[in-house]
Each structure stands twice: as structure tokens, then as C-alpha cells.
Length: 402
Image (cartoon, rainbow, N blue to C red):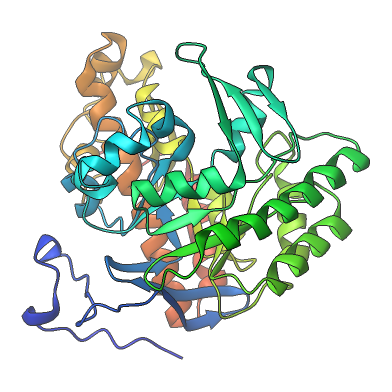
């Protein structure tokens, strides 16, 4: 099963002219998912909605506070991103969902007219544990900004996301940090299922948008399967897999994907939340995951770490201070191709903002190139060979001396 890639000028997005990125014409009025090709468990598909199409496997740059840090929106788009992520909890606190709504919604506010996914605030239930109180009704947070108390119920989480106007919304869930006891993991999983039902009712019928349920269950296979099956029975438009990459070894995460993905419907998108490293992405795609988000490429860029096809490069290391080579002479990204490592080292050591900008640009470019490579390999029926080639490149450790 292969995708037709022929396009004409008339059905291309003018913002992506010359990038070879077709946009369906006319734009769909409803949210949908189409599986275009499969190689083993790896899937190539499209998530379609009125604001555009997300080519899967997809990596979503994280724009926590309505901005992908150190990047212009147009840059993010030009790298190949079809969708970005916003954070309900942080936008609720500042500048406020009501204010964003009054200013025309999150897309207009952030000057991003393409799909936006918002998370529900559930991760902050875990990460801000000292500042919250849990109950069946929801979560009371004490703002980390000014100490003001806020209450977020499942209904309020969806209400906020609707005020923001996001295209894909997440149910409110309780994310358990691992390791945890089986009883605690099951309690949180069951609560998350009850909250999913409430979120579904609050979300209602919105043909052009989607609400995803979130599979929980920690590192307990039977709980993962039960959570996935219960959410599947709710017949949602998509399914997220949460509560992973929260302290457990990578193999535990992959084991949980192997028991979770087969339970989920094949005709709905699967989104692994908060993941991860390039190796996490390629291993998760091989187990049937379609969508990802993570702060790693942007956060690493702000701290002097570059991701390349030859592995990671730490620009804080003094061995780069006389190195005239670029990060990757084969990259299409100017940040990777047109600046020497010596210059990047200088910027990082001098705490110049341009260093963070260039390395973030490089990292997001590499992540999008990684996803495009996987999409192409799945269509060609050579995903496993491609996976080996990518890992051999990382193991090589560096480009040849120029």
C-alpha cells in the first residue's frame, strides 16, 4: 500500500512551496486518520483536519507557552513540522485561556495557522506534586508562578482547551512517576479512565477536532492492556500512551508499547507522550506508534548539545574550539551546514543567545529529517534496514575529517 505523491502548484501550501510537501485539496471538514502503508508494525499514515494534515510518523515540536523556544514559527514550519504542541496548564496560568480566546484563539495568538495539539495538564499533576491536592473531582494546583490556587477538573481541562481552540485535545489524567506500587498505579489508572469518560462528555461532538484518551498503567502489562481496552471501548478519535519516559529504563517503555499498541484500534492514531531521544523514536515507531512530542531537542539546544546523523555533539567540550567542520555538511539546515563547530563552541561558552538559536534549529531539523526518513522507509518496505543504517550512523560518532 503506497501513497500517491504527485502534486500540482494548485494544491500546495504556499508556505511550503519548494519543500515537496503536498497538502490535500480541498481541506477536510472532519478529523480523520488514514493508514497509507505498513512495514512490520511500523505505520505510515495521515491525520487530517481542517487546518492541515499531519504526516505520520510525526514529531511535534513543543511550544509550551505558545512558543517553540528560540525559533520563529515560520522556521518550525519550514523544517517540516505539521503540528506543534501547547501546554494547557501553563497557558491557563499565563496569559490565561480566556485572554487567548478573546484575542482570537491560540493559532492567531501564536501566528501558527496549522494544527495544534494541547496536553491536558495531567503531567503537571505529577511534576508539581508538592503543589497539588488530588480528589475524584479533579486537581487543586498552587501556581508555581505566584502561589494562587487553581482547580482543574476533567471538564475544566477540556473547557480550557476549547477556549484555546486546539485541534487535538487530551483528556485529563493522573500520571504516576515510576517506580510505584501496583496498587498506586492501578488507582491512578482507574481514576484516569473515569476522567476520560467525563472529558468525552464535555468535549461533545466537534467534527473538525479530536479528543484523545490516555493509556496509563505504569509498568504493569495487565493494567496497560486494561486501560487500552477500556479507552478503545469509548470509541475516541485517537489514543495517547502516557506515563512512560518518567524514570523507567527504555526497555520497560518498549515492553509496555508491545503490550499496548496491539490492543489499540488500527484505524486511529497512536501518540506516545513526552518521548524522546532519536533512539526512542525509531524503536517506538517499529512497535506501531504514530506521533511523538518531547522538549529534548529544544532543551538540549539551549544547553549546548546537538543531535546529528552521526550522533550527539557536546558543544561545551573544548575539543571543538579549533574545529572548522560544521555539525553536518549533508544537512539541509543552515545551522548544521554553514557554521563551524569552533564558532558554535564560542557561542555556547560565551552564553550568546545565537548559540541556543542555532543548536535548537539544528536539533529540530534533525528530528524532522529522522521522521521523514522513517516515513520514506516504511513506504519503501525497508524500515528495518533503514533502522540499522540510522543506528550505524549514530555509532560512527562523527563525520570524516574534511
